[in-house]
Image 1 (cartoon, each protein chain N blue to C red):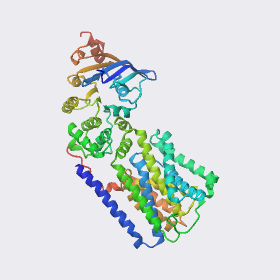
Image 2: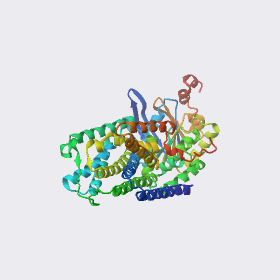
Image 3: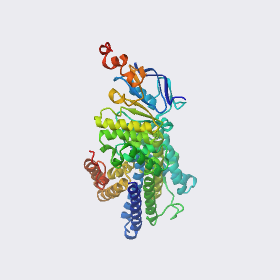
Image 4: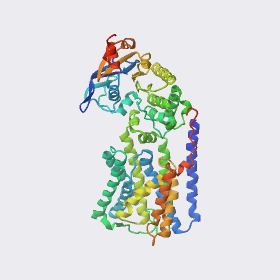
Length: 327
Length: 243
């Protein structure tokens, strides 16, 4: 039976490699810039949602404030770049580290909260972060930061003539987040997180240091989301508080995972592959005149999914549970 | 040789309620000790103090020659205290074997070894056939067994069993009793809380009776069941008169 388990892990890895290879080839066929844009965002949100899933899905600490880490990644990168000339690649790393440290600093008081109270705290903290950046003159306040254009360059990670480098970076980010999840899933941390989610008291009695597990999950999750934020800042080349730290990012990280299957390896990718194109397309189609139609469409979708398949779309594919004879 | 577990003058107050008053007990290595007493005697409170769910208001707890009074539960588990819960607390979204792996990870950092240890414990506890079933799909008796399996996977020196035999059918209880014996034969000391006397008495080497938060008597099961103080605690003073 342990062979089955190892085989399943290997199969997941192979499927991921095949999907990544197919994704890598799409730009050969897709030349339309609008579609490329949607693909980039889909990959980015898949990666972000996958990272969110580590803390909220596996460890069960539902965060609706991950926009904070996304924004911190974006701001750290661009402040370092515009004020000190630090290359975005280092900024990206710095943003990740800053976010991970802040996530742990916030975790210290907030991981004592349970359930709804924790969720509310994450929303409030992200809003406070948003307000602080709104009023922080040095960081551009409400005006934000325009990233100076110095021409296409891998070194500075900016490209005007082509979106392809962004596409490949988003793909790498998505694969990285997936791989980290895959790797952690069959590790001490992965088991600890699921135990903490299901029953913290029992976990504690089995030697799991609940508080440290939550801190570890928060750090990994925030780091990866911040890298996504850095990428996004480079991609859109202009940031202001709303456009990188707004509440919608927290939602767009949570929804794909919830839609696809929270706390599962494939849920976030599946959810993002459906939700993000749908959001972008409806916005594109109904955007200008009928404002909010896109929101109505996916709001309806979420309601339908949570009524019909509360464990996410992925539960459609899961093998029927073996319940054995002793029922 | 020092006893494996010792409580020295332990008090626990919840507001005005005194759940344990001046409880001093000890459990020797290799013993099966029963902690019994009528409802509300303070058994579960004492059990939780020993497991490290909360520190006592007063007094100290010693495990394996070390003062563990203020040590959190997770650390006590690493020192060798395993426990089950009276109201089962399985990890419901995880499979049976994954539940046990969580316990096995205390002493095995490599996943492959933790998994092997978990298999071994499932064999030992008779749950091997149910390894890949979700914990939420187990029947109540199996869930109790899973509690024991999970705790055993942490390779404890002392296993604390909280009413694992209560509420089972007599066949299930018999298998449970056999399992506890097997655990002791594997060299693990057992402290079990029960209030069903007829199940525990034949099983334990020694029984400690709590009543109204205090140690009423302790001794060999055969003596305990005849003790007038125990009879009156369980059945009321009326019944103790003739004893």
